[in-house]
Picture 1: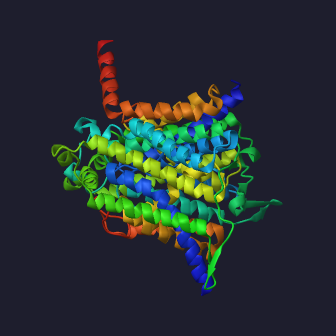
Picture 2: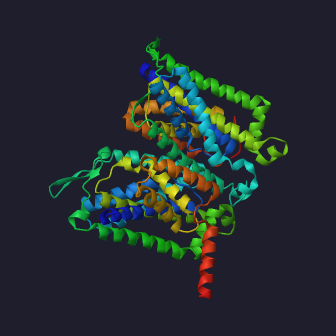
Length: 317
Length: 302
């Protein structure tokens, strides 16, 4: 029993990191209705520059944190301009089917969705290659903030640094939800996400809102990358793919676009993975991730995926 | 470039084109699949096992692979096809990853003619030696790959102006409209997805016999996402689009080693820029139409 609880606790802590990673993805999807495939690569390149500065220039950990977050936002700006910039700028840039065509509800995709996927994938490749060219070795040093002690209570153990990451995820989610739901700025974001045209008519600068949301999401990816990497004290080229898959699964479990959902989705994923690993080993853990994702996608009612209802930027899909 | 290398490169292009064509077929009926690599893998394993373990000849092995790919793709499409857009893309990705992980657990080793052969889980599947044992030269194998590719292209080109081809395109354009005109949308999509599975599996079978060694790690999401990328870059207007995408990436950039480690930096940036201005790819419907009109005009005047 105690072992089961310990495993659940470990899974929950790991899941909080997934939630942190998924936040940016869900925010981008919520405002733009587009998936940013370059999400992980953006954070990865920023983290690589941070690692390079740390190893070669002796930058302290707090400096690395600033660089990673700032650069992630900056690279995000580049990605946004190249792949997503056209979305907010008017009806003419929409795909051949036109915006929000009523007949598209049943399925299919519109032109810009495909283009955003393809071009953000191309940039993913580009950014990842840039990072690898910067630091070609597989393992690279990263500022190590991992705690050396463990807290024990009632026979359960947990690392304070992982708890700090979990608290960070919770804090950011709560702050973001509060901001979205209870401020005028948040209202503008939600309006721009739900009804682009109507939001434009009441004077919201939709393009600007979307670009800002995108930058915030990318900065969040930098925060997540720094938090996760500083627990490990090292960085590998797997980071980009890892962030995208874990973040995407967490976000989709909670319902893509829902800010609260990504927290619960991340927790669920972490706990399921921890138990799957104990039962079936590392391969089973990986399998469980995708099986869970697939089941949630297929079993959820049409038109809305994910386990949870609304919240944040989620609305009728 | 030495001839041998050119033959190898052309073979690669032909095989990858089959995979890109399969991604194109799914795109045609209005879905994005990030999971075509799963059927590529299934075809590779099925035909490899048929030719090494059961001692089948190449052609029936490839056909078996294609059949397995079509059946698996059709069956798995059943629960997923009602998902749309991004959800479908992620569901196919999840399925493909589950398949890849399952292949890591596939152990089926038998002794054939004193050798132990067969898939050995994560360590891969060695010695798919049908080509070597039967003295098939690389040139002859290239011809086979090109013939398969040409056959697939001919079928698609033949279908294009016909009822079925138009119906498929219409389903991709607008499902609800298609359904309201009495088209069996789900059945058409199932057909296209099953055919896409068969095409990918054919490519996989050819790949397995050319490489003689396959392992589950080869069939990761990167492969499937690349296939979709090729189709989108080349354009959705005709079946030649995916080919163009493959040639652009493999033929132009990988073959000419000008950029070395910076290939993806250049290629990625170019593609993103390119898609910004030509969202439906190089050969989109309008361009195909214009080229067709110009060709007809040219024929009339000369």
